[in-house]
Image (cartoon, rainbow, N blue to C red; front, top):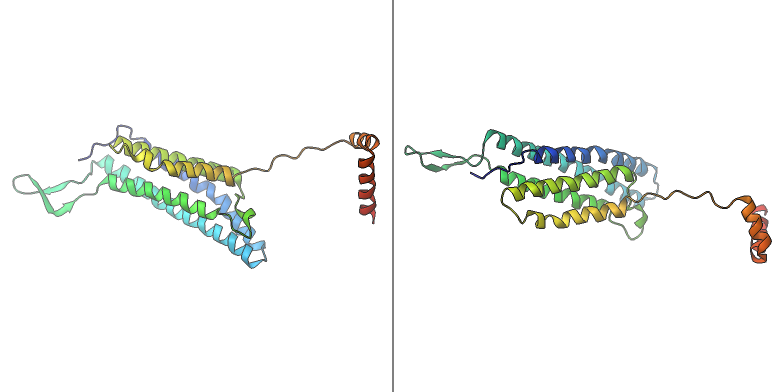
Length: 225
């Protein structure tokens, strides 16, 4: 039997982080659906629809992953870990197979999180004609979702490492970096616009520079035409 990690709180905490991811994706999905309904251009609408489908697929994969973590947590709590049936002498008897292996399911869960990361990356891959669509519609919620997804991957890596797979952190380091880069790229918020120069400052600039005065006069003439 495999020795279980001493910290039994990792999987519940990972599941909690994935719940946050799932909840936060809702706002982004709703915004994309609403946007697609208002777009008349077929190609542009198709791009937004593809993004919506990616969010949907990510949500479904998160659901599967949380179920896997619940299975692993339950198996560990029950002490189930590849037990064999026994023959009359008490030796392992393999023809009947074994009980479940929590470690295998945990690896599958970690792979699922890599899949979620890849799907979200596909959602926000810029297209040649419409690169501006590759952004989060709800940047605050998506930033929280991506940060929580990274936290969940971190927790699973720690759990795998505690189960004597010290290479897990290296194996999933690329996913963590990818999620961080994705967050920086698609969750940019629009900076607050300044109030601009006051009327007195504009007047002073016009009086001080003939070029500005001519440009202002031309602009006023165009606006009134």
